[in-house]
Image (cartoon, rainbow, N blue to C red; front, side, top):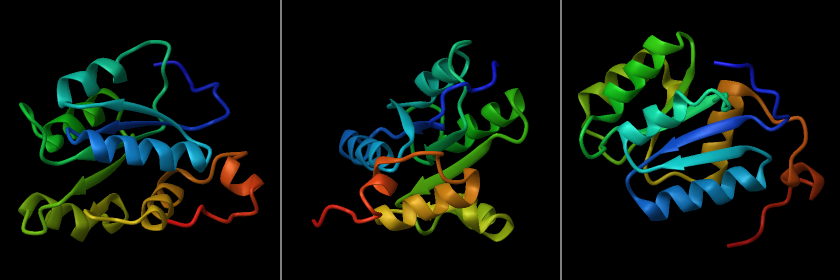
Length: 144
């Protein structure tokens, strides 16, 4: 995979819920990231393998149709060891999420989560983008 020459970090978002994908996209754009959205594991793997796209972080929902988010994350890590992955899930009783959280709590985010918690996790995993709209706006989010 070629190094990412895009000044904005590229984040792969894999979630089958369209509303969540679009909300994450909006948050990532606002904070200076370049999101790539897909609905399932096979699409996520296809996008990840594109030669012209270097992924800096994958945000993967654990519950996906077909292959699970855990299966996708394992394959992404096999293809590029050390890739940063943020696991998201609405299942607080997931044994897999508990195991990941025990080993690497910064890699787990339970739904529903806030814009602030999402961005904080991303900053922890890959850092802040060099220039973001959020920073240019004085760090003030739009009120909801």
